[in-house]
Image (cartoon, rainbow, N blue to C red; front, side, top):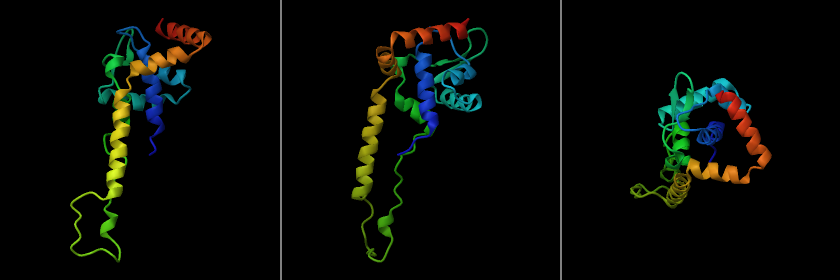
Amino acid sequence: MKMTEGVEWTAHACALLAALPPGIGLPANALAEFHALAPAYMAKHMQALARGGVVESVRGAGGGYRLARPATDISLWDIVEAIEGAEPAFRCSEIRQQGPCVTPNGDFRKPCEIHSAFGKAEMAWRAHLKSVSLADIATEVTRKSSPQKRAAVTVWLQEKLA
C-alpha cells in the first residue's frame, strides 16, 4: 500500500500543533516552513484535515491551524482518513469470475481467500493506526529528541507565536 506524501506531511504538522499551548494556532505557511515544504500544498492538506475534523482554522491573533480536539483524541487513522479517505486500500475486482476455467454456476457470494487475507490485513493496519494518538507521537518525539533539537523547536515556535 502506498499513501501520498500528504499523510506524512500532515502527521508531522499535527505533531507540531500538539506542542502548541491551548488556543494557539500556526498558519499553514509556518507549518510548511518548519518542514521545508511547499506552502500551497501544505495549505491544501491542512484544509482537508479541517474538513475531516482533525484541525480547525482560526482567524486573528493566535490564529492559524490548531488541533480540533485534544491530541489524545486524534489518532493516526484520523489523519489518514482525512487525507486519503476511508476507502479500503485493496479493491477486489473479482478476477476469479474471469478466464477459461470459470464455472457457470460458480459461487461468488463469499469473498475469495485473497480478498479475505487483504481484508484482514487492512483491518489490522487500521486498528493499529487507530490505537496510536498524536499525544503518543508527541511524547515519543520529545523523548527521542536531543536537548538541542527541543531548544531549537522552542525558539522557532516562540518566534512564530510572537
